[in-house]
Amino acid sequence: FFAEIVEFQKIVGSLIELVDQLAKAAESEKMKAIGARNLLKSIAKQREAQEQQLQALIAEKKVQLERYRIEYETLCKIEADQNEFIDQFIFQK
Image (spheres, rainbow, N blue to C red):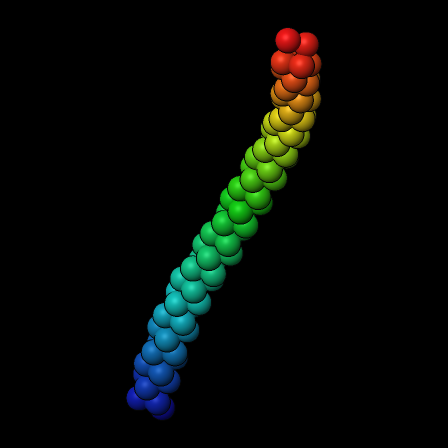
């Protein structure tokens, strides 16, 4: 009977060690998964921030383009006026 109890204790001890090892492995994998999830969240936030920056840059460039378009139209009018003035000046001579 005593030998059976000793054998049972050895088996239970081995089982406890195995369960402890599995628990440690599971905890390690859990930490890896949490780390990976946090990394993905961080990457998503970085991409969102980058997208916002690019949207702001696009808006800024659109405003600049509109300003250049207006300036170009104004310069075209000035050129047309000056050409008209030159033409009138030449015809007056």
